[in-house]
Amino acid sequence: MAVVAKRIIDDAVVRKDAKAGEKLLDKAFALAFKGLVYPQIWEDPVVDMDGLEIGPGMRVMCIASGSCNALSYLTADPADIVAVDLNRAHVALGRLKIAAIRHLPNYERLRRFLAEANHKENAAIYAKHIAPHLDRESVRYWEGRDLTGRRRIGHFTRGIYRQGLLGGFIGIAHLAAKFYRIDLARVLAADSLEKQREIFEAELAPVFDKRFVRWLTDHPASLFGLGIPPAQYKALAGGEKMAAVLKRRLEKLACGFRVEDNYFAWQAFSRGYDRAPTGPLPPYLERRNWPVMRERIDRLDIRNANMVDYLRGSEAASHDRYVLLDAQDWMDDGQLTHLWAQITRTARPKARVLFRTAREPSLLPGRLSEALLARWAYRAETSAALTARDRSSIYGGVHLYEFAG
Image 1 (cartoon, rainbow, N blue to C red):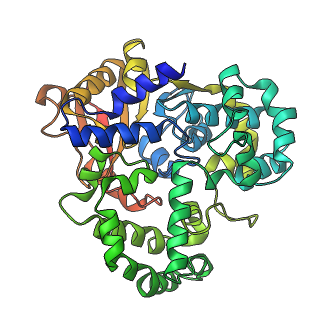
Image 2: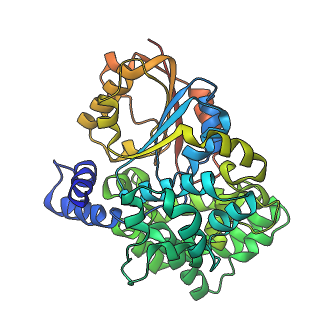
Image 3: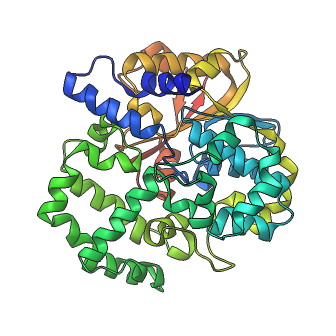
């Protein structure tokens, strides 16, 4: 299984036509990507559902990542969702979340386990309520040891959102903030958007002008912790200094939305969710959605697979909605063509595809053949509106296409 997982990730990440130095960076990222990367997915599921208009009877394919979005889509009442991922740690995390929703006795226990995720009793709760219902591979992962020698299930007693590549990256950012004497908690305590902006401009923005920060972020490996491979680093930079790009994205996160409505801001500035009963959470963790999550959880299937391979094995005209995250930023033209050929073959009438890009424009024009792209209508106005509303704030564009037949 480990050998298969390594091949799947290497095939997706390591560019075959890259120069020797670039290929070495790709392999370094592939090695880092084999462990847990995203304890929480960083795409806004509310934006996804608004753009996709998921509804009853629909079949959805998405990339699992931290599974927050795949789970949240269940609140829109689709017939079924298949979430695929190259990373076995993400698959194990998603399956653990499914088992927790199915088998934990009440919402309060679910919140303590998955939202707060740092209570000592969570290890015993896992052993009693979750482990007996997990597949063998997921049990092996969670009861195995991490690089420090501790069992991975202990992440849920120490704070799962502080773990993985992303959790580590945010932790380093917090250490840097302390070094520069910045109190990130002040952003979360702000009582207005105006106050949030005042704090950002006075305290956070100047950091990106520091010589060390500019030097550090000029290196592609510096963003591995965000799950950004070298190929996507170039797209994100777009010819600019990376420090300037990151400053703009952080500005939107810190100032674009009230912190009381944005759980992504809480993850960035507190390394967890707001503990207040009314604090923002992903839809699947909201108290109001607990009954429907229990009712619909069996509609979600999480698989360790490449999405092109999954679609190639699917019947024609079998899917209604596709969520590609930012995976296309990693792809060359041949990979894009293979993917969209399979999406087109498996799409039902009026199917929709939603994806994100590091840069603002859609990456498909000029890279897919005109004949293939002509079968899809780009919803430009909707895409622009979705981009503006995406609370995660780290992507340049959210893009929506609809099958034209």
